[in-house]
Image 1 (cartoon, protein in one colour):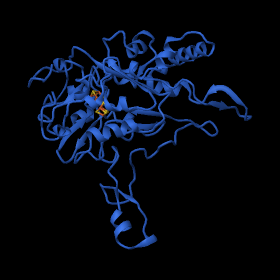
Image 2 (cartoon, helix red, strand yellow):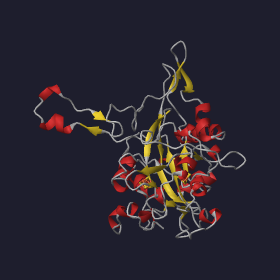
Image 3 (cartoon, rainbow, N blue to C red):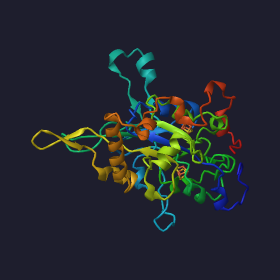
Image 4 (cartoon, rainbow, N blue to C red):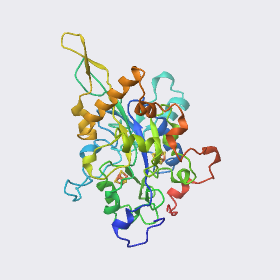
Amino acid sequence: MTYAPKGAPKALLKESSRQIANIIDLNKCMGCQSCTQACKNLWTDRPGTEHMRWMNVTTYPGKGYPKDYESMGGGFEADGTASPGALTNMSDVGDNFQFNHADVYYQGKGQSVHLKPSSALTGEDPQWGYNWDEDQGGGDWPNGYYFYLPRKCYHCTNAPCIDACTHNALFKRDQDGIVVLDQDRCHGDRLCIEACPYKAIYYNPVTEKSEKCVMCFPRVEQGIAPACDRQCPGRTRLAGYMDDEDSDMYKLIVEHKVALPLHPEFGTEPNVYYIPPFDSTRAFAEDGSITDEGRIEISVLEELFGPDVGEVVRKLKAERKKRQNNEPSEIMDLLIGRNFWDRFSELTGDPADLDTFSTAAMSDGSDLG
Ligand code: SF4
Ligand code: SF4
């Protein structure tokens, strides 16, 4: 539906004629945060959104963003019942550091003061923030490792945030399956935040309402890829519709089955898929020699992507071997993406042609449907 009628049953709110989706290739992400900045500049530059990063990139292993979201519950149990979840707080989602610019630049104190952040919440030294544990990673020396994990709302097919809202403020758009949060109907109860296992909804203390990634629907409506996807210099992203069988994205997800959802055990059927990191740096043996084994153990990837990831890693390695031997490999060609535009199927429009839209709609109660 374009706009959910009041009192509509939850099953109806989760229906859509089409479903937009993404792939993010973790082998290519370099943690540059271009996607994060693209989203921040476009959508969360309003009062009360300072701490929000609808698009975020963190180091894995790490606490993630929001902090420890993986252990905060939400989503569904294996039998389909809703799993209780916890609320994030303003510190978990990154705080809003303030800096002593006046002291440093305008008080004539010379070298006696230096620029330093303080927490907007406590006024004290910050105890946590976005990318606080950047690049620390995991593994035991000398076999340390990490990779980057970009995340946004997964626009889930079975979205528990829609179930949880007692005001039917959340629903899927009929034309693209984007999960939107109607600011008119939101009462700021934050039941959706508790329900989302990915903690992809954020509370705005100024408007006293919740907000989330809108999959850049004003762009998508005009055939333009979401800003975070389009902005990625690493060509990690593919975007398109799940019914477009000719798209590169569809081939990788459905035909070749090398793209996997994050934490499928949450039961929400997310629509952002990942190409798992399949060839980490070779590990050192105890005697200091270099082995043929990668430093990222399959068990680490299984925690993120479920039991199928081992087979996906084997397949990706075999396909790359083919390419190294000058044999054809459609999977490698799709992943390399020599033609940038092939990655976005129907969404190749130019943002320069975008009809003007205002992000003020996010905070003034305008209809998002
Ligand atoms: S990721 Fe969270 S906010 Fe997004 S649709 Fe799924 S449950 Fe809802
Ligand atoms: S799709 Fe748009 S709104 Fe969502 S994270 Fe990317 S840039 Fe932000």
